Length: 158
Image 1 (cartoon, rainbow, N blue to C red):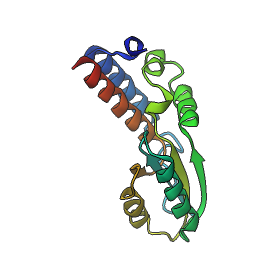
Image 2: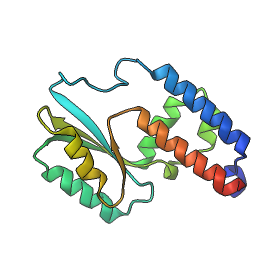
Image 3: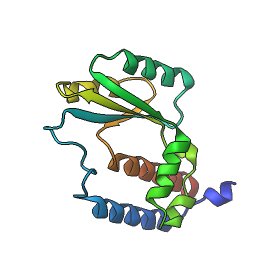
Image 4: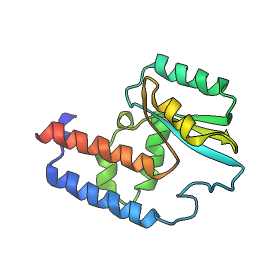
């Protein structure tokens, strides 16, 4: 299995170029830049570390459920994140072949009330154990996946 996951630096550079091409393709696409400030709802994503423990996941879920600024939340596990990743890169099999579900983070898609202080919410959740980052949607999954690919390339070739 390790041999299948081994990646050369040239492969990582090629994947990085593909990543940048996808980001460029997505730039300006409706929905990619998230909702505007005039929207009645604002969504953030609480990205968990790929190796977050069950206790860390449960603690974040309880905190989100108890947060008065949250109007709705959805948990996305690593398998669902991988399915999204496969769909996004369906025309780039070299990227799909280098990522496993456990490389991608699970997340909570959190909808906030329109008057919620976005940066305050982002900062509060970002400090929690097991949280990788808190962002507004879409391109961040690509960024996290790229980081996992680069880390794997460094550890397997370096």
